[in-house]
Length: 72
Image (cartoon, rainbow, N blue to C red):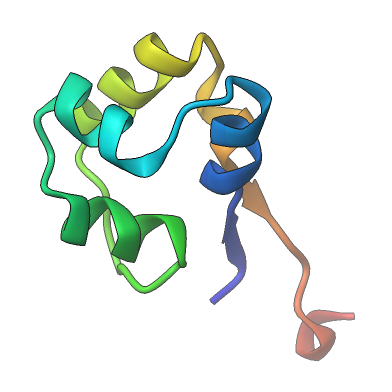
């Protein structure tokens, strides 16, 4: 996948553990962990909005497009 998820970086900047973020945004720890580890194919805008609100960041801080070796 060419989209890198930097959720762990933003969580570290805010010193917010997975459990706390999970509770604040109303997403299970399992689903949030899957997102953090890049194991998901999609994310709802409402989820992205809640994460950005709690971590005081922009969607581009969490999602990053990375050019694959095939496209170079």
